[in-house]
Image 1 (cartoon, helix red, strand yellow):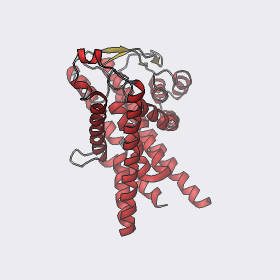
Image 2 (spheres, one colour):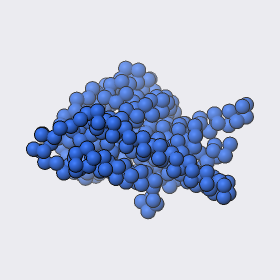
Image 3 (cartoon, rainbow, N blue to C red):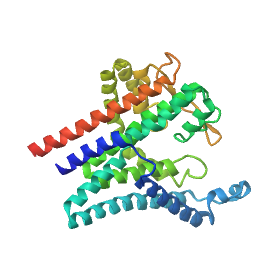
Image 4 (tube, rainbow, N blue to C red):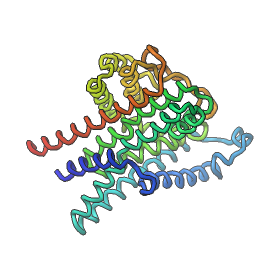
Length: 337
């Protein structure tokens, strides 16, 4: 029951406070650990950082695919297992001193793991720039949220990219963490965030990370498999509550939920596209190279910046529905088991 209370309080704190810039965030330290290990691994593999190699050196560099993948797997396991153990034993030690110290810190960490308000705030920065007619500023803001090249995106493409980010990160930033926290508290929730951070830092299919980041990317796919589908269901229910196109969300989900290079991203993007009567996806440039992606949804109308607000409403509806469901399930399990 204690963990259930911690989840409830942590979730409410996230909705109220978000992630203030002045407050140190554990994900920052996970990111720093990844950067340090990545540098050590690349120096072991290439004798220097990959970005320090000239184009001529890259062309003649003898790369060993299996060796790079092995080191990438080791890097990933060290970060994920290390994160879990640090959080687990910190809480264990605090409980030995006094149980309330553990409860307070775990609640605080649960709050930090979740990213509902943060996702809304960051996406609304793009919305505000588009509403003001500042396309250049909107391109800059969306560049902080996506991996694609943003310097030549149109207003509609910027809005689409923002909606896709909110839809995908409703799962990655809120539903998946809640799912893993419900299973084993902050240690498993933080381990999931480590997986997600690894994927965002080294999970690219570019020349630098095509082998080194492969294990991290695959692990992220596995970790998000159930949460992404849970999130899609909650977003569909949210579209019904909000008065969006519920039938469209179900229809497009059934048709386009695999219309993505990732096995999970289109699960939620398809719901958003159907609920808002818009089309997402398509080919975009990453690191100067086009990446062909299928479209998601029907091109019923142009995407507008107001759709960003609507997608954030879907984010909040799915988050609240999931939190309530998890809390009720844990209470019922405690009562009958």
